[in-house]
Image 1 (cartoon, rainbow, N blue to C red):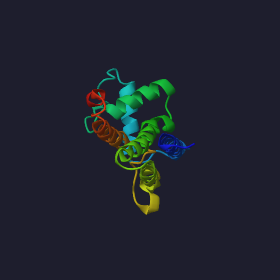
Image 2 (image 1 turned 90 degrees about the horizontal axis):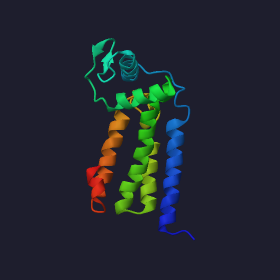
Image 3 (image 1 turned 60 degrees about the vertical axis):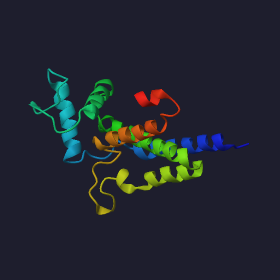
Image 4 (image 1 turned 90 degrees about the vertical axis):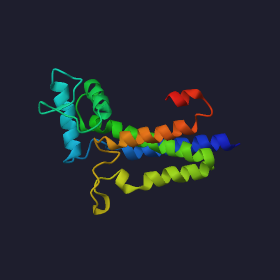
Length: 175
């Protein structure tokens, strides 16, 4: 028999699978977009080929334009799995899956599992999150691109989730 916990688990599984499909399917197929995606890949490659791997670089010059977390995580992935568009975009795709699950969990704290499911589906239904240049609008910072925005949004949403759970455990506070 289905109880509230089972329904919640089923909805989370459906959201996870749907998110994974939308964010990971043919992730490396699209060409690298100009501007930020191209620049970000260039920063990772320049830093990996330099003697000082701690300082972000582009074409031998220091790079301080953006926070370094995405670059460092991507450098680890490139070192482990090799260079490919899929690997460069992996952090963004994982961030999209994390956000969709977090939306479910955040909404579920106050409302029903069905409301949470609808909220997560609504996030996944926004074309600009997934498709570059959907509807003729420029949107290169998607959850399927080599950009920093998805990771930063995921970290903010995770922070909200942790803050909402502080009353249950002090461990969330430390996170």
